[in-house]
Amino acid sequence: MPKEFLIVIDGPAGAGKSTAARILARKLGYRYLDTGATYRVVALKAKEEGVTPEMAEELCRLCAQIEIKFEDTDDGQRVYSDGRDVTETIRTPEMSMLASSISRQKVVREAMVDLQRGLGGPGVVAEGRDMGTVVFPQAEVKFYLDATPQERGIRRHKELLTRGIPTALSQVIEETIKRDQDDQNREIAPLRMAQDAVYIDSTGMSAEEVAVRMLAEIEKGW
Ligand code: DC
Image (cartoon, rainbow, N blue to C red; front, side):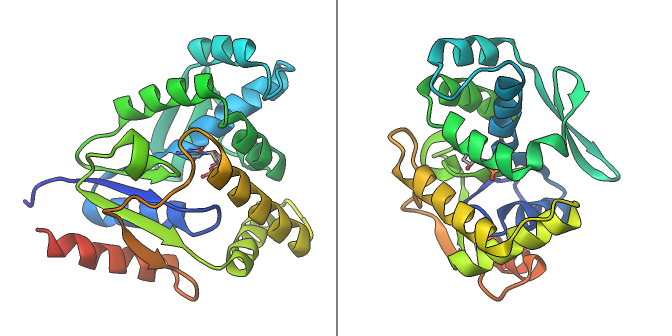
C-alpha cells in the first residue's frame, strides 16, 4: 500500500476540477472534498435569511451557526446545510455568482478555511481556488487545472441543461468569465496557481483523461 497523499486541485470555474477530482478519488480510494460547496451553502443560507455579501457581521454570525456536512452515497456526494439536503439547490447559476461574491468576505473565508482544514488530510482530494496556496500549502501533490473560457462555458452550459436548468450559452460563458475575474482579483486568497503545482490544460480532454494524467503525475512521486 503506497503512502497516502493530500492531493489538491485548483483552477477556474468549469475547468473540470470536480469531475476529475471525483474520478481520481475513486481510483485511489480517497475521499473527495468539494470546498466550493461550502461557500455555496453559506450563499444559500445568506439568501434565505436576507443577508447580502456586504453584511460582514451577519455573515460572521451565520458562519458560526451553520452546520455543513458531506455524505458519500452510492449516488454520489450529498451536501447538507443544518441537516437539510441542499445538493441540488446550491448548484444554480444564481448560487454560483452569490458564492463568488460572498467568498470575498474575510469572515466567511476564515470560517470556511477552518472547516476545510478539519476535513482535509492524507487520503483526500481537495478541490477549490486556494487549496495549494492558502488552505493546504503543505499538500504533497498540487494540480492547477485550466481550460479555455469558451470550453469552460460550454461544459457549464451542458451541466446546467442536464440538471434541467436551461440557460443561453452566451450568458453562461459571460458569467463564467465574470466569475473568474472576480475570483482572480479579490483581495483575500485570490485564485492563483501555487508555485509547486503541476499545470494541466484540460481543453479537449475528457475528465477521465485528466484523472489518468494526474494519476501518472502522482505515480512519479511514489
Ligand atoms: O467551485 P465552485 O464553482 O463550486 O465555487 C463557487 C465559488 O466559491 C467560486 O466562484 C469561488 C468560491 N470558492 C472560493 O473562493 N474558494 C474555494 N476554495 C472554492 C470556491
